[in-house]
Image (cartoon, rainbow, N blue to C red; front, side, top):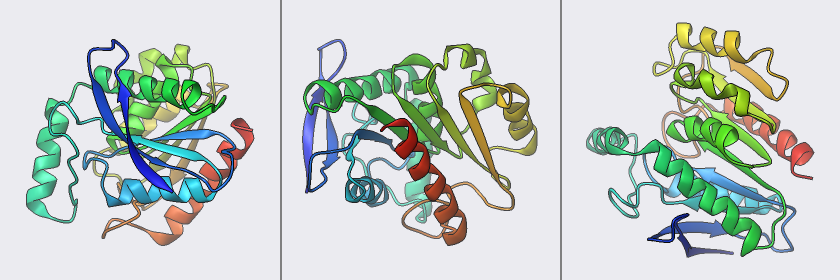
Length: 232
């Protein structure tokens, strides 16, 4: 079962929509699914639905709500891809993390889920890293996160498990950035990095031409095991 709920911002001055997918029985835990630059589109909703099928309460907050509420874009359409890049350029990432924190609190306080993880893709992968450093999320996963080399100064604040999936041929995350991620995080006791040689950005998307079936299956299998361990 799925629905859209309204969640209050942390400061109580506003609210944002959040897609919620519910399992058939009492949830084993909650997972906040953090969007790409394309909004809470059909692919992100499908991610939520799949987590619900695995027994989790899955929530995808509309992080672009202040820019263009309920936007849904297709990365395979040139004009929509350009719109997504424009929205990303205007997006306040710090505010986005606060909305993710508000969603975590909603899952705990309003839905009764004691343990809450987060998983993000693209921009959402970066936000998952920021969430791991800035909130009390119980476990975080980032797929092809962008610009992590500029966030390594926050790694000391990561106190709960974090997993990052790195696309080896990611044209948004070039080899020097990937190396900086390894240099900065390989020895972190709470961080696990997985490399996917030859795969490009977006390889685990649910819908569209970017998807690589083998790579997506492997990364999702690792994510499922990670959450099963740390959200139990």
